[in-house]
Image (tube, rainbow over all chains, first blue to last red; front, side, top):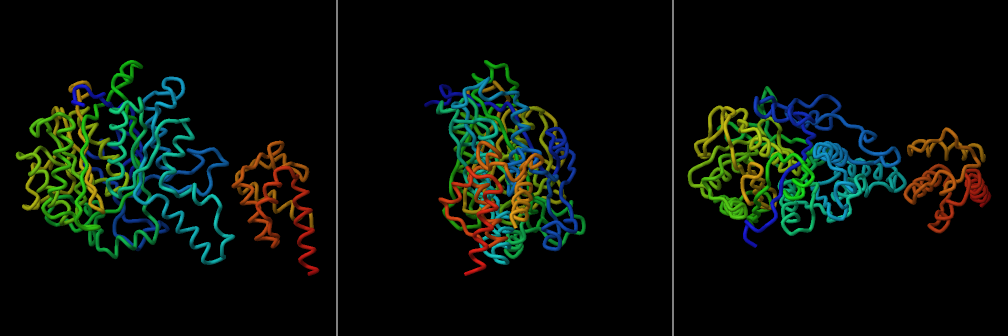
Length: 417
Length: 86
């Protein structure tokens, strides 16, 4: 189907639960002014003593998002997903079942590891006291699909539902799936995004032992520094981002606000190594090219790229090479992970939200801590937040496993997308 | 012992976030009373096994919904007594 005949998808609601806030304005302001959400883990936090810096989201009690009888043995990744979904659905001003047929609503909320910390805690009990210490509520409390399932239960969503577990590309894959569901006329509305709560001792130790994490920074706010010559790893973060994607026609008919349109997606696989990116960046570049093709745009139409940019030596370099390969002349590029840290399976979701707000507000948030750009990361870096029309922007997500996903957003109503 | 088991059950239900303010030994666990769902029944069975060593089969557990708290407490007490004399 040519792009012009496909149904256009638009963003009508967004919710964030992040280390830089739970409110959209607070979140985007933090990105634009470089207000860091990265701290030395306080005593009592699961990462205390294990990492120098962590991006910790606000506390949340199960009772805030679930009825009392369902509010036990529920992992934090589910609570954050539910909180962000509540905000996104409220933001979209949509009543499922009243404004839209529940069978025409989908939910695709992804995660990298699901409720690993809850599993870990139950496992401690099992090892200490045996089987009777393990709650029968464990599976519904930690399974990766439970974010989608519990949002579905809470809001009576009866159409397509799924969860795509692709590590750090999971949130972006979920949003790409939403676009497919809208284009295929399978749904009129899709609640989508990602959530991650990686702060269990075992998982944090594994990242640390893999020497993947930023270390040695006296000020934790300096630890995540994408594309900077002194970068030495990523900062582990937690949180959730949820987006309401609708058919533009449907959104218009109900008079919904359109932040921006979701007009293209591209996904490829490195087929190279379980954790390292393909050094030539070719599959990553191909994901961006596919996304542009899907959007019906030429490379020069995209003014801003929200990079995956995790602050690892190789990752940032390969992404820069890939951006050059896909675009020729580099669009403006920044990574918002300098202030948010790396939210893994939620990263693609909160960065899509950042990209949507960049398009809507005409502001490209700077890369924090980018003091001396690495010459091997030769792109047009946004070192100071830029103000001006963005038009169309692309968000990248790359993952362990070599999953590459690019999404394209544009000013609402500007393209046939 | 029934009073002790009754207390264990009611405390357990409170831990499971059930409103136990009006719950007595005569409260039914199933739809006519607290309306416990299957995983909640399973939790209760584990609690009783853990505390008193009384094991319940799946079939027995599904019968819990028709019983009052005191009837279950009586069953647990009987099994404990049998176990003690064995």
